[in-house]
Amino acid sequence: MIPVMTVVIFIQVVMRYIFLSPFVWSEELARYLLIWISCLGSAYAVRKGEHISITFIKDKFPKYLQSLVKWIIHFVLIAFFAMGFVHGLLLSISEWEQLSPAMRIPMSWANLGITIGFGFMIMFGLELLTEDIKRILSAKSLSKNNKACS
Image 1 (tube, rainbow, N blue to C red):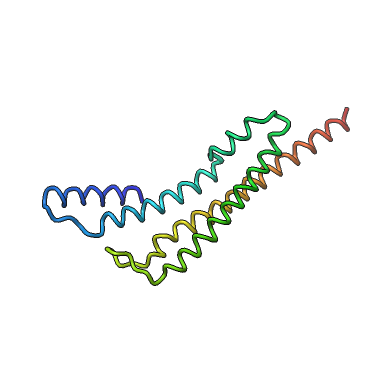
Image 2 (tube, helix red, strand yellow):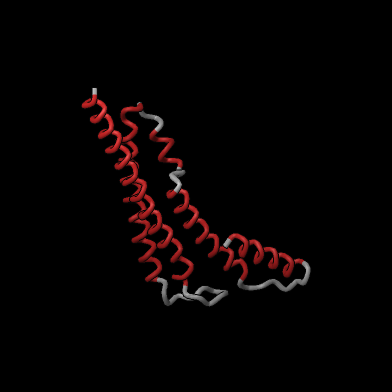
């Protein structure tokens, strides 16, 4: 989507300043692509665990509380993502019959990126939470086994 947006904007600039005949739809397309890029990029950041809140807040606590704080952060983020998903879905449904001014496509197509992005964020947040739970449980079972062996 980024290359498409770059090419469209470049062509728009050429058409506007060299040929004095800009495309009507190019800025609108770039805006909608930016919505999709932002939402999918945020989902990718959640998948990689690179959201600033997770590390910034967790690192403020002592080592023994960091696992608990990380779980709380995951639950809060998943709840926020669920609210974003529901509101994005409601927005897409409510704008189904409204057409965009230049491209004449349903506005819900542009705003569906919000719903899809938050849907991915929910899935990736749940995945990270289950990985953390598995990691904690396996560490506890290893420490129990080590105590039993000694």
